[in-house]
Length: 146
Image (cartoon, rainbow, N blue to C red; front, top):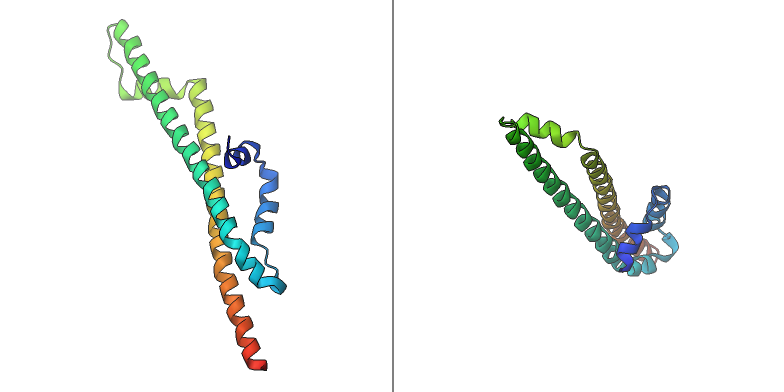
């Protein structure tokens, strides 16, 4: 297991707001170091985001496959009674499954994590723009006073 997967496995929502504040904080007294650290932070969190997206995609595939299998199961059940299952019958059959509810809830959680990490990566991108702007202002001030 790589460190990105480890982060996702140990992720706690309670820590997310603290993480965002730490990653987006700016030390105005050390802009050069802030700018130097940003590429590695961006790369790291983009990799975590990529892992979260892969999990979401696998969860989506798993859920869709489960729905298809349950639909076939429903068709077979109706066929054994001499009837034909309608699309609504199959949908109801799938939706009434406890396993489907569990898979759907997992998918919602995976999507929430993915979107939250995507927002974090976008915040780092905004931080880059802010650091560039602050550094530009600092240079302008130096020119003004020299």
